[in-house]
Length: 594
Image (cartoon, rainbow, N blue to C red; front, side):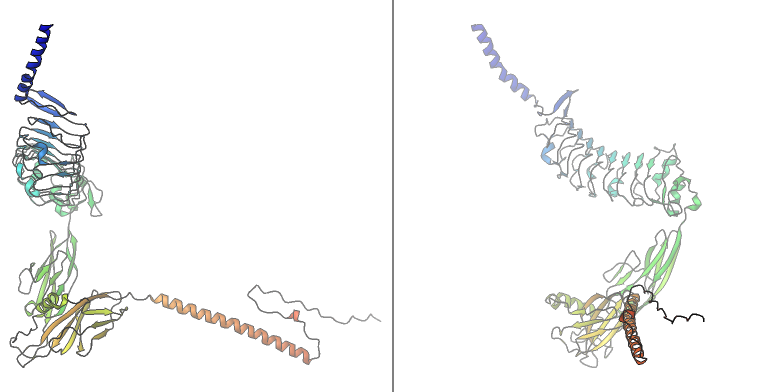
């Protein structure tokens, strides 16, 4: 018994040193819901299908493969993978991840494969994927990605070989970053909302062997040398497998280069124009891939504006493909966007503050691959009335200072007023009452000037109003039109060499009522006349019946005959007429023959 106790005591005495030795060797306990495998000196931690809500905090830092798929993890942060510098394969597929914190993978310098497919990611920030500088395979399919920051892939541009962004909500991807991945072999962009590819987006991807653009919103594809590798099986380094079916291809001359590649193994179809819709892309003859040259449908022919006011020149063009619009100014230079002028893609040119130098002829140019069309627009800038030609003195504004006056009004007293300085009320289909207040005490007003134009007619109309008036009735307006109106105050010149001072009091926008349809008025008139005639007819008929009855009664009394019974008198009603009573003539019986 003593020896047994002694042996047992020796075992108990030796157990703690053995545990300490195991801990000193670096071994760590496997997370409770997971399975750990140590094969060929590579530790794998398998935690798939374990109902996890977060990354287990006690995962061995020496893990090489970590599988966390099919759980309920919602967010990732830097503490989850801290000091796991030897991790090579990380699988987080089919979780509920909505957010990846900055540098959540910051310590994963050895990571080669990252699977984040089947989650709920909406966006990737610049720091979301920072850290894995040797990453080769990135799978992000089946999320809800709508935005990827331009620098999201910067840490592994040189090493990435496979990138899967399919089945997301992407309209744009970081093309600059993708185009700088020289080792990229596979790029999956299918089932997104991409509607355009920048020219040369894949020019530097010499190793790309598969590009999937299926089921996007691409109507056209810009020429790229990369696509030509798809038709040559002997091409070097490898032929390209290109898929772009399921896109609304617009089969015109812009896709003729693609049609000439002759890829009979694909099943793309045309979505437009109407004559080619539904036809097999590769079966359409090259001659039917045509374009229509631009045609100027309508444009501003001439426009008069008061000096200092806004001028809007419009030009609309048709063509296939849609023409690109440009404007050339009176100095034969291309008009670009600046602080004073702005050219819109739809062909509208807007000059914010006109001056005498803006007057002249403008040319609208519409171009597309099939040709170009031009239209001439004349702009005249009307100088404000003034008393001389010399420069202003004493700080009084001149005719070209309307914009400065407007800015002063907007930044100064305009911010102190609760109501607009100019109002248009009592608006009908053809008229409107313009009213304005006395405003702030300023230079004496010589006269007011009202300027307005409508959406139906671009011609600027102006009216002169005496200084004593504070309202003016606009007449002869176009029904159902939008109007822009501005009110200016003109002050007399202080001396013979001074210019007339101009001050913008305010502007307003209003719309006239639609015209009353003529058929409604005619219908009411006809209905009223019909009712009057019907009532009058009933009264006249009743009067005639009464008169005839009196005449019959009087005639019977004068001849000494028995008066007619009242039962023999008939009155007119709205019911069906009753047959008159039959009168039987009583004649004396014939005497018998003698």
